[in-house]
Length: 347
Image (cartoon, rainbow, N blue to C red; front, side):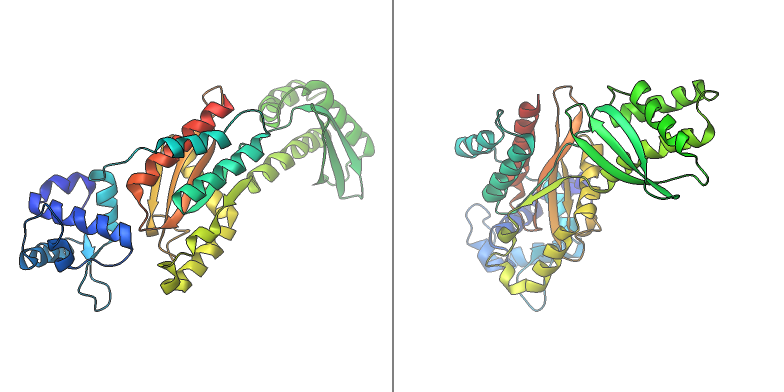
């Protein structure tokens, strides 16, 4: 059943379903009909509630784990609740103040992002995650230093004076003069540009200077710039804080799931790939359980929102990782507020 089908449930079924989900998200344990009947506002007997719960189970929205008489929402049920029934609660004044104090200007960006991730973790009782903007250096000078017949060290001096080295493979039979020629070309024609800007201009410049820049040097220029772009995309900066929050009292009964989750969090490249989906989507993303391949085994959820720089361009993603029984109504707006705070900081 999709979120569009909420209206297809009877008012009685919606009321019972909402109570089951909210009770489960609060306690982490299956909810029985007798417990529901004691809650104010339903005015239904335990027998009537059991019948409604059975109907919801047949629709695939509830399930009864093991031999328990209680019910809990399925992954589909959680998705239905989050998309069509959840009533969010805005962060409190204290929560907003705590987040904004960490996302304040006047401190190094990465330090501020780490502090913001940590406070979000503490407030949500989840693991906080933040994908740091990739700060591309501006080219000032570039050179190639041969270390063998097959390889050279590409040395890049950034506009801020930083120096970075990468090993690149050389085209077969390339003469030493081509290394000098390629380094001079990059330094003279592409200085003052970021790596992405330099690569965008590269095709035009090499095509225009094909007679002056031989094929071997052209290939070397392309490889010299590509090694940094490839390196940056393979190892983006991801900050994770508060993994210990995932080992709570309820999780102690399911240590294998927690172990799997902690192992999955260690695979930062996979998490980055997941967060890139939130960045590409331009807005809040909620991944529940097996909706994302990475956390399908541990049955965990991810709530993530992108943040922007002063030009309005998405530069990173902030969010939390936790069990599927998250308090979505509270944490979703908290993550959204954190993304807004980071956007203001980056402006």
